[in-house]
Length: 326
Image (cartoon, rainbow, N blue to C red; front, side):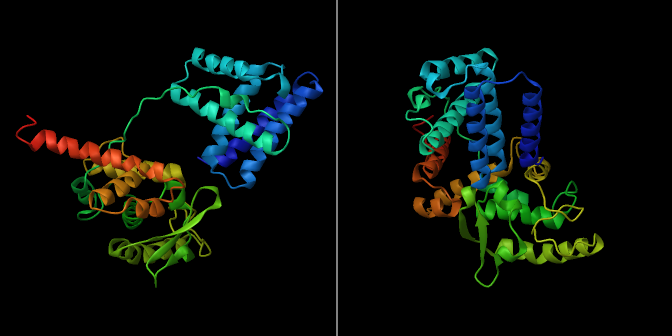
């Protein structure tokens, strides 16, 4: 799914609905214009399509909730709490409500920078307490089983699928980063790849012999496919069967399909392989800050989540093997 295109379509639909509505007050139009300017600023900063889509949905819900009572000075933390209660009444989960609050906080921070407001009422509202769920990460043995032998018959493009898994697990990159890799981003002489992360941030990640071998097998097949499709100018490293750049949705579907065929949980998705990368490196003694750099985490606290995953594994091993734990 093209999330950026979907977000634009939603904007057009909303604009058409606005045109058909009754004339709006100047204050109401000002609030809506400010929201649109904020969303435009996200696109200009190259925010991820998923982020733009989520913010668009959350903020449009907020504008609908206000029902014409739109004046920044009149919107206080009590009004925002009422909006969150409204979302709960609609049956939204705590995670969705927390995301809506985060969207409002980001909007108000932008409004403050632009000099539109002086206070951030959203910062006075507590975030819903979310259950701490640790993702289930495949073991090293389970991951090795994925790479043993040829790709399963479910693979439509076996050479590409193997490279996809090698990059996701071997480099710890995000799904969106994977599909964004261009052919000339690979620095084969140095064994590194240029990765474009969130917010236009770039970093280099190293790759090992397994990725190198997968590239050597995949690239000739890629060239053959592009020649047949007459798309020799395609920059994307990973291409679909029509010769175009792959989408995150296609990658997710393929990863799940291959994982299930190899006996892994059907809950496996591309980010699971990224979690596995961080967790397994930590288990093998890698430095936490080095993992932070490789994963492209802005804050070390994000990377420290992997220590929880590793400790959980240690406790499971202890409970199963130590004679005094039974």
